[in-house]
Length: 82
Image (cartoon, rainbow, N blue to C red):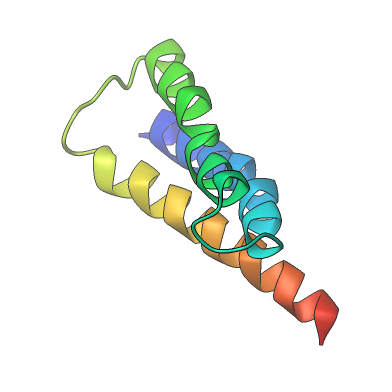
């Protein structure tokens, strides 16, 4: 179980800069899609190297961390503008 939390936290950290980048480009542009999809290979490799694989019990944690990192990265960028 501690391995799951470490992987979840790392997935979150990986997605923060990509969410920050995504918030600064035009929606549905090529860089926008790249900012969303570029971290996926890192997450896959991380899951495989950690031994988590694709167990259904761990997917909600890592998927949630993925979206939370993207969201908060975007909020960080929005907060710097205002």
